[in-house]
Image 1 (cartoon, rainbow, N blue to C red):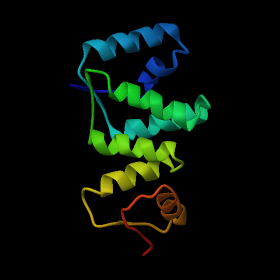
Image 2 (image 1 turned 90 degrees about the horizontal axis):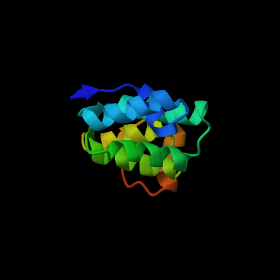
Image 3 (image 1 turned 90 degrees about the vertical axis):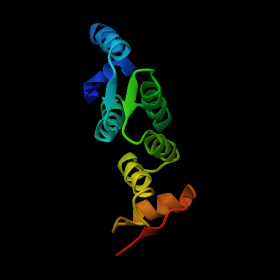
Length: 130
């Protein structure tokens, strides 16, 4: 298995046809690991560099993660984080909170925006302010 970089975003945006074709072939022929940090950076690149909507970003990342030879760390929590992101939570915050659910009794932060977003989208996991 080979861990892949965010540059494989070319597969999802097809702005460089030669690189998109190479990325598609690579993803088809290799077992690939997409790290959570790459999911986060991909979301940032698609948002800031390509100006895609949250829905488009979540769909493109989900598509890549569901390819037959693509694997990711803690896929269920990453997909849950994408759902929360699509509903308005910051992607980094969503990834943090979704990962924390299996490892802790709550998520402590001074960022009041995380708690507000969690409440707005009905996350039942405790968000605590120290």
